[in-house]
Structures are given as C-alpha cells and as structure tokens.
Length: 84
Image (tube, rainbow, N blue to C red):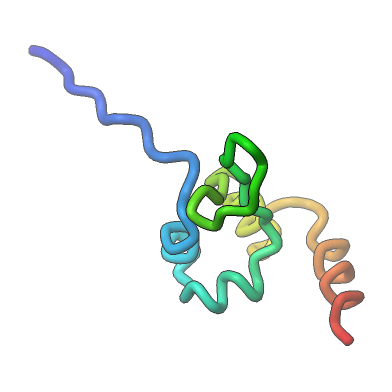
C-alpha cells in the first residue's frame, strides 16, 4: 500500500493569513501583534506585498499570551510601558 504524505504546511503567511491564523481581524492583528513581518523584497524596499509573518514566531507569541512559556510577565510589562 502506497502512503501519501501531506505537503508541508506554509511557514510564511501574508497579513490576511496571519490575522486569520490568530483568529483576529486584520486591523486588530496589526494593532496587537508584536511579531514583525519578514521583508522578502530582494532590494530591501518597503513593499507590503512582500511582507510575510513566520508561523513559528506567531506560535511563540500565542504561547506567551496563553502562559505556556516563561516570560509572560516581562512581555506584559513591556506592553504596559508602551501605553501612554
């Protein structure tokens, strides 16, 4: 019997995909997510069409929010410092 292996999941997501991955609207995702997108532009220019979010970095952020990893208090403290 031949086994069919699934294709690997995508590691880099567009803005809309990253927001959907986190179950957020794009506007809420942009305001709340501290994960910086990766610029895939070969010349380094700022082109929103070439920005991607790393799924692993999004997982780490979600783990921080859920308290699954150490560092949660430091994360919240750093956010509090940003609040005017």
